[in-house]
Amino acid sequence: MFSRPWQACAHDCFDELRECSSVLPDGRPIPARILFNFTPEEVRLAGELYPKLRPRQTAETETRGRGIGL
Image (spheres, rainbow, N blue to C red):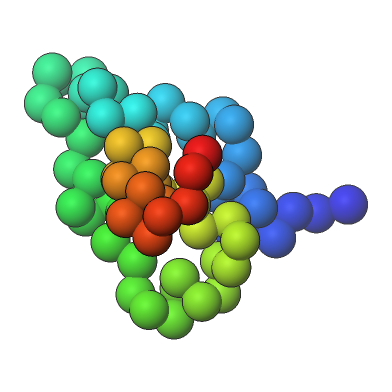
């Protein structure tokens, strides 16, 4: 069975990319503003997977801002 694109992007093998402390091989930080710049349509299509797709710190901040505990 094949994964849907959003399910594949949310897979645990990509968790390291979502860590705020992750860096590229040359030591520069991962360009999160580019990598995780989702359009409103992409956010809608990702649905409940959206928090998993975002960098952890960003997802936690957004969730707390809505009064939702993790």
